[in-house]
Image (cartoon, rainbow over all chains, first blue to last red; front, side, top):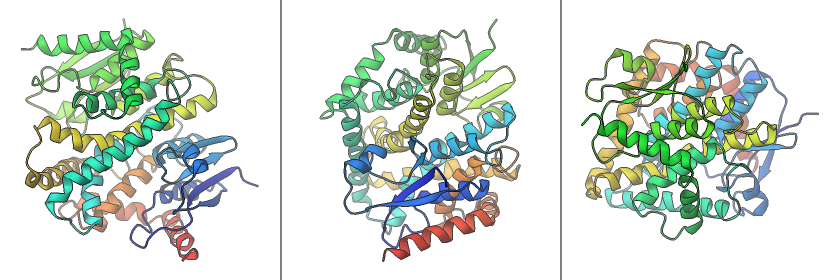
Length: 212
Length: 212
């Protein structure tokens, strides 16, 4: 019996096969020799059950007993915490592994993803790029709107996850990108109303102003 | 005396002020009431010292004693592990915080970042978008090339960070995007030569083929 269950789509079109992100988790599980089984969820009809595990309607997600985790980076971190083969035990190395997990996503994939989408679509004409970028953001905001309409903070109480998410959404808001997403806007307002944000913001402005 | 030191640029142009990512870390530090000091690094001349802490030549980074961390997500996770005010202690909540840290970066900022760049640049003409996207990726690959030319794996030994980074770069490679980046290409080849990758890849292909 294993309590690690990886859920992916039951089917995907030909092109993404071999690149669906469940491969990252399969790879780590194989590397660590952890027993697991793979579960399927319909590609075509994504229901409430799907969104309850993966709020963006994507795959994969991993359950470990009664804990359910989405985001490949978070699943890899979780498995790293379960196996020394995936994350060394000494504090320096652990810190390095964690920073590079974030770097892979934030500094490299953030740059490769828009580029890859155009490659996947056969280098679509320039004129459709802006539509693609606008559509990409809108799709994600729609899902965040559903998440934030139902909760005050992402993980029950205010946490570093709210600091990061609110700061990401705050920049979108500054360009009026949250029009039509009132729960997202309220969330940004709620987070940035905290005295700690006001202090941090004032300190940053003062820091750069001091160098002028 | 504090051993938490946050390093940011000495100066930035007017537009990004209030949005430089050190604000995420300042916010968390203020929220937790952790003592810290802010250190400056030149914006204009980014030297070897800078790249040794932040391989993409960006800011911020955080040192905690003899541990140096870049990536705002990784810094927030580190601070979350230091303070219950930033990450609750029970395992379910901790897991939720971690997945949402990754979600903020991978599912939301990945979509908002290209959109925001165009907003920052005053909605540049369509025709420059492809150049922007190509340039964004190239800049990141240049830096990864320098990192990977000097080491076999990102954090000393093979880890989940390599699984994630290699999978990100593997997709770029599949579109011939690593031409001119031999260290990146060798890294992808080295990582994907592991039996665990071969097994994971074959299993994914078999999974989707079974549904055809």
